[in-house]
Image 1 (cartoon, protein in one colour):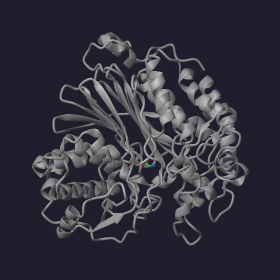
Image 2 (cartoon, rainbow, N blue to C red):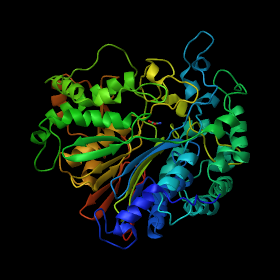
Image 3 (cartoon, helix red, strand yellow):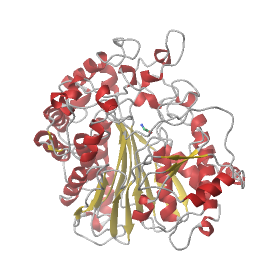
Image 4 (spheres, helix red, strand yellow):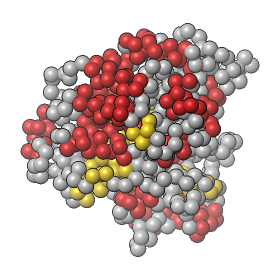
Length: 595
Ligand code: GLY
């Protein structure tokens, strides 16, 4: 497949308006001394930096980084999943791309019920009925076509991923840890076991992982673009694999579960960027079918009218107990709206304007009293452990352009089904639908008809790729995270700590996190040996009536870039094994391996 000869509109604008579009030229409004990349794998970050150094822009580097993650971060990087990207050009022109998975044309909520009409939660988590039509191959191609620099063809962006798959790389301690978990091995099908469990034992750290089938699939994709994935032998193999993946409690799925026509019909979609303001900054973030952007802007809207700075410790920027109380209550309110009102806007009229209307935001703000106001109406199970299903990457280039991109397989390693002969894993994204109204999904999230499963519909997401512009309209911060609903609250907390607390990016990313998602009512606080809250503020919150729970797990994995003057600071969350880097500085050392 050759690259379209039409020069993308955003490339033209950038080239015409800004003298700094060429590498090395430091003049112009948004220019930086160097570009930067941050992702959840140092090899993928190195690929992104290589593309920037070869003259690619942020969109080019984001695409190449995401494809490298599809090889070296099989837990979440993907061809068989989907995602979102928010891009801003040096002109300030912004663009959002939705490459979320869709439900197949035969999707039917009744297929998730047993004979007695009871909802069977495993059916949207594992087996053929969990798998959505992948969006990444279409979306990554579109991002390059629409926003790439024009200096590198699509095949050149896929090439580093092919190299990594073909030549292999040393398994990192995080992948080795995940493969060593019994529940991961159990869910893998035979082709996935052949790759990750040679001789029946999990790969260990340092062992070489070569993925010849994946390399072949990537080569075809590099040559033919989306048609190389959605048509021909890859598509045929994908459908065959789905149709031999048993449905829990049923056995083999019916022949219409996922079809060649479903694959051929898949299209990523441009969406209107969601814009909001907070403390003199403009935020560019993802609209529905993500709930992430709407929840982030709702919470920040409520908080923007409160005297936050007076509740911050002047010495270290740490939030005081009263400020934590406001954060939690604002999150609780926004997640309540999420459960009732958010879904795929092509199928359900999401009342975005009403939810962000100044009157509604003000009403929410005045409803916050001195005491916690948890919803006591419904019982809800404790949220299950966070899965490492999703991954985020951030890129800035020297022209001042930026991309925030989050992609996902949903659960860690998706549903564990690898397409025979093609080397990629399939998602279990259909669990992000509210399969039955009010019944929690694997993240404990509840929903309503707004997010009911329908043919062709996209499940509601929490992915929150976000770009913050400073008062002069220049990129100040690019960020996002994995972590199910904790994506939203992790992103919010880094925004609040940097923009209100004045903390530097590393301190803000490293700080312990809390999570509040309306149902269940409890606010969760990180309590691990490395990331833990002081007891003082928590005791004060209990005094205000907040139900709290200390959780021995790490929340999210923020991948962020802060622009300090003209210098980017790339920060990968020490909770996982990612790494940031800059063009001249190379890739930073990844975080400590898991214990
Ligand atoms: N699968 C995680 C999300 O989209 O929120």
